[in-house]
Image (tube, rainbow, N blue to C red; front, side, top):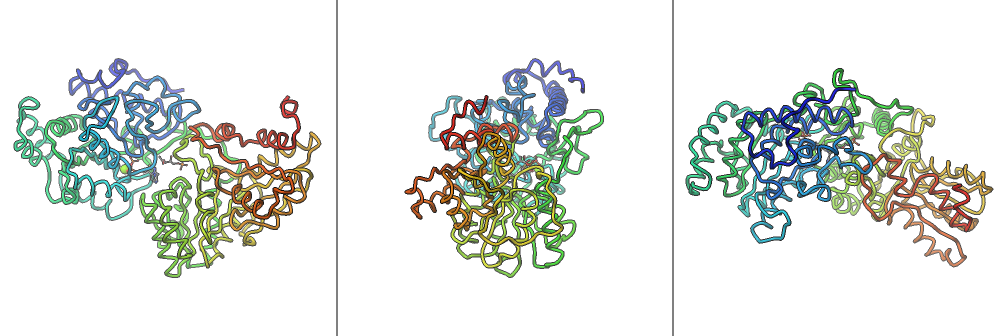
Amino acid sequence: MSERPKTPLLDKVHSPHDLKGLSNVELERLADELRAEMIWTVSQTGGHFGAGLGVVEMTVALHAVFDTPRDKLVWDVSHQSYPHKILTGRRDQMLTIRQKDGLSGFTKRSESVYDPFGAAHSSTSISAALGFAVARDLGGDSETGHGDAIAVIGDGAMSGGMAFEAMNNAGHLGKRLIVILNDNEMSIAPPTGAMSSYLSRLYAGAPFQEFKAAAKGAVSLLPGPFQEGARRAKELLKSVTVGGTLFEELGFSYVGPIDGHDMESLLSVLRTVKDRADGPILIHAITKKGKGYSENRPDRGHATAKFDIATGEQMKAPSNAPSYTKVFAQSLIAEAEDDPKIVAVTAAMPDGTGLDLFAERFPSRCFDVGIAEQHGVTFAAGMAAGGLKPFAAIYSTFLQRGYDQIVHDVAIQRLPVRFAIDRAGLVGADGCTHAGSYDISFMSNLPGMVVMAAADEAELRHMVRTALEIDDRPSAFRFPRGEGVGVDLPERGQALEIGKGRMIQEGARVAILNFGTRLKEVQEAAETLTARGITPTIADARFAKPLDEALILQLARHHEALITVEEGAVGGFGSHVAQLLAEKCIFDTGLKYRSMVLPDIFIDQASPRDMYAIAGMNAEDIVAKVLTTLGVEVLSQRA
Ligand SMILES: Cc1ncc(C[n+]2csc(CCOP(=O)(O)OP(=O)(O)O)c2C)c(N)n1
Ligand SMILES: CC(=O)[C@@H](O)[C@H](O)COP(=O)(O)O
Ligand SMILES: [Mg+2]
């Protein structure tokens, strides 16, 4: 185990207030200690890493200059907020981060007054900070008071449309608002897009040194705070800006680029801005993701498992089966070898969706659109309308961003976009912000949509093929984060019959109708139940839409009880089954129907197994549900 670093200055910091008396040199030393502390902490826990390392100096400088929590500091995505958490009274809990009952890996209002706004999905910070600015100016109530509103947003997050919607609004309102663009020339993967190239050009055009000198000069010109008139302040800011940027056209003052690791520069600029800004201002800070430890890794150490600090070696549990993501990617590549019309879209998640593999094989047929799920969906719709066969590979939670586009651009026009919905169900350490809980509901509600869920990795392979063959309407297939169950994989997928489920085992009294990867838990539950003399019938629905009506009615008519199981919120598969049973008057026959869905709460981070335990959806919960439904004593079973 790596030794905890010595951090004499940091040990004296219990809140940002303790930074106020420190000199610039001490703040610089504090940043070094904070970085060492963060490296050690994440080596023990795993988690998001590179982004936090890149904002260590910025975090120290922001807390030294601004008056949080009165000033509202909003971190975009907030995967970079670990140093902020350490400085804002949560250092002692850092070893619990992303674990059950521990700290969240993201900012969270209920966790700290220093987290004025929760995040985890990207590109929301400018909108939220603008909201704080307006609340301040219009006398909103706030326990911590109202001061400056500061958004820290990455270059990747800046590719999201919301950031521009917010700047458009902020430039128009003209309120004092501070946006720090943390430009490390990385998203999770290297950023793509014209905006990214534009930022690089801004950076290339104005070397730090000149700016640093200007900033220093400007600060030395300042008399005490609050003594300078507005005219002078404007001139001062102008002297440290370069003109003609896109941001200025949108109504922001642009300051930069500055070296985001240079404490002197940061402090000078932030102090100047704090004292003088009178409208929206954007500070362009250049940083290195992974600074001081993982900056040379291809992903700059975006996220990591626990690791050995000396060797960098990550401690990952050995895998027994390929991940669902990999099976998806390999299956799609196999299909694309034969069908040149197949194209793939990712919204800034090439590695996470496996499309990095697809892009290696078919570079011109793979599109990383940036953090732009809305655009990604409509872009795919356009390609479908143009005669291609697009697969939009998007995490369930991020697909929420593109919902109107799914309805308006895809479903209403019945365009054959294939949605490969990764990270379906509860994902673990990222917690409720990343849970894929709603896609079954929001996709199954749409007329004409085909909605599938894979029960194992072989099923996923078949569903890729099935989606490919559905060329007259949109379709979706969902699969979870992590490893498959280890079933044999067919070389190639076989198209499934649309809207047809499959029988897994015949039993009596109770039928369990599964949708998705709870099948393993259902089968485990069935073993326990069989030992108690109740052998359930098990079927795998495969489709939530269209429903296999014949199968469902058969199960309902030949069993005392029918229980559906799905890894999704209420309103999904089970609700559609209930609707069918009601319409066919099956409830009138006395059928006991139960639907096992995610409960109506947001479940915080824990292992997926623990999250499903909280949700009441593991094998033992299925056993209990069967027994209570049949009126059999549960307690004796548990004993
Ligand atoms: C809407 C949405 N899509 C995708 C993601 C996944 N995601 C998390 S961080 C990240 C990259 C962000 O890049 P940037 O803002 O530059 O921050 P950096 O990690 O470089 O500091 C992405 C794509 C997300 N959080 N939200
Ligand atoms: C912050 C963020 O949104 C991503 O980094 C996310 O945590 C990735 O999740 P996976 O590890 O499931 O790809
Ligand atoms: Mg970045």
